[in-house]
Image (cartoon, rainbow, N blue to C red; front, side, top):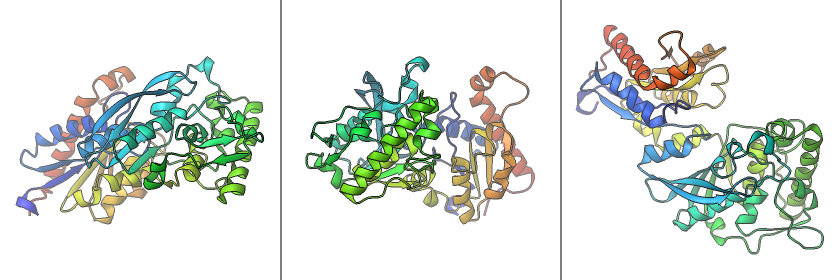
Length: 387
């Protein structure tokens, strides 16, 4: 072991509405230092491809955030952003930063016309920095346009039977007859796109983008059926012209079908977000010689085992034979399922019956205190980790 010091890897996700992943890692570190002042504590901010992924990867790699005004989901200007990672060669984009549901008030949501145009603008701006690897996180979308707005922003022409450009929005895909790639941004072909999502829905059908996610974006049953038919036409055109099958690919329905658009327009590689993040931050290398891993996020429940950060970290640690402890703001029904997926112990950081507002406000102190107690238990058991 290097320098004969105990090595602990701290790899949490963000605690939503209270702490970024880096802030959570710093709080855990401060608690552990009270008991292990001389330990080697390695902070690795994590994410699973959803909200907070840009911030986590920027913090983990020493990169920077870049803010740009782009077209929002309903055509209005919004303040978008992307991350330029520490290697200077990779950018990470959350599609929600340009086309997220948060930009559209409840009474103004309309997936028939909502567009991912701003996502394409962010991709183009990232390419201006010379990057040739882009991680695109899907989730939280207000759109149902199959990523066609993104394509339009990147110069790709979507044509009707009269060879006119179709309008933006999911509904107009019913008019799509041909795709003109001849004027696409040439840098797309030179760039590797990793598409991060933990959604496995196909593009169309009962489990597709429109049927499953359309209602939360403002689609009635009738609108959802109309959008599903439009996406089927999109898939048919791609199949006929580009000889690609995008309809039934797992994840194609993510973010209103942006997964499918990333497949055919970006030649993207759809992967679980946590796998992409683990690879990008070199987590396996950082685990070398560690005696303990501490992970966590705001809420751990029965859904955590489906591609969430604590499980991804735990599986990685288990391959190296390292025990894993998870800390959470709340533990809900089914949380015990994580014990079958690599987590050895689970702790809530909340000290008692408190309001959500109090829990959010005191998250940093609660996290540090719980980490300190974890270290106390570890030490009292005689597991110092010293070699």
